[in-house]
Image (spheres, one colour):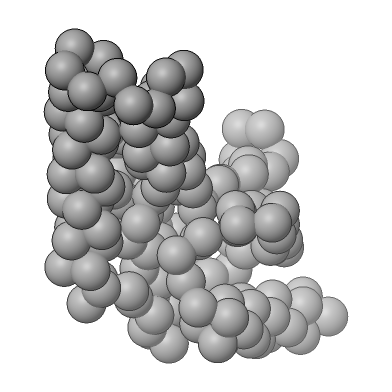
Length: 158
């Protein structure tokens, strides 16, 4: 099964640009307010704080683009940001038989996928992916596909 939200890259880029424009407009409005108009008083700092909070929420929510491919004998995960220099992209590929378990953590707006795979050196390794920007249907499809792989692995063992 293949799962990707790469086609939404333009939407995420637009939102990022819009948030940066709001921040620039907020800084401009703050400077005009402080040095020219002085209507709002102390509340004028909100013109900068609110756009920074929204921008921070957008970036802290995780990497925007997630790709999953379980066709063939291997599972391939990719997780990257729309802005390349913000964080290092993740890309992992391993055989299906190494998948031990997975867990999806849902904390308000942040969603994480934890994959446990078997490893020669340490016994098992946990891989972490940010899936906050996937829809509920995409997450359910991902869970279904991973459960299918785990079930096939358990049948081969017994």
